[in-house]
Image (cartoon, rainbow, N blue to C red; front, side):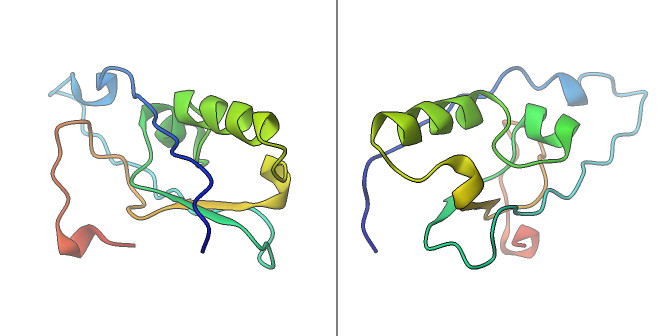
Length: 102
């Protein structure tokens, strides 16, 4: 495995969990991309934007990923498989457990 660089993303406010009167069930965000891709990118967990869209790496981190790939002459996003270690967005302050693993 070759590590080309480090991609660091930031997530917005945890607005999905601010209304305690409205029950919220996070979406399970599955990986996407070619199954036979030579590159697989694994993030830690989906963010709020990913939960809203139902797709991985579509928020700020996804935008940073696109710039990183373009700027380093790497394969395009459509040529790599992207996924997350944890499949559900539980908020910024949530601490995952082993039971949360995908």
